[in-house]
Length: 87
Image 1 (cartoon, rainbow, N blue to C red):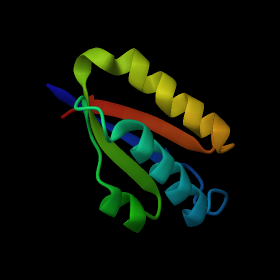
Image 2 (spheres, rainbow, N blue to C red):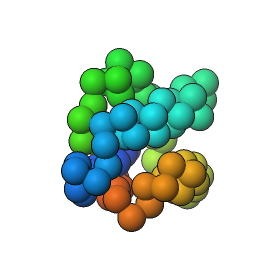
Image 3 (tube, rainbow, N blue to C red):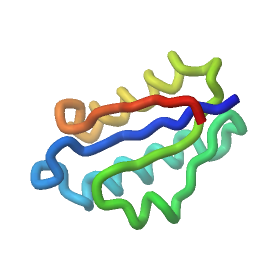
Image 4 (cartoon, rainbow, N blue to C red):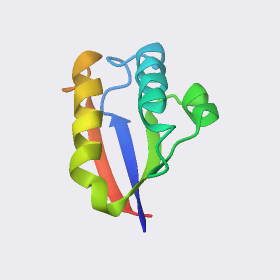
């Protein structure tokens, strides 16, 4: 079973669309080859305030580490919220 992960900009004025899409593209490159994830680059390219993808339920710790690492690299740790829900 997969969980729906969503990274939401808490203040769209602070986190520009360009920065969010750059983060999303890097997240896509990190996850796309792994069958444990479902992520759509076309959705990332159209996003304005949130990115979502699906991940296998058993890999929550690894997924969180990947997302946190990329948020930190893009200086967005304090600007985004991560929500996880059953898919």
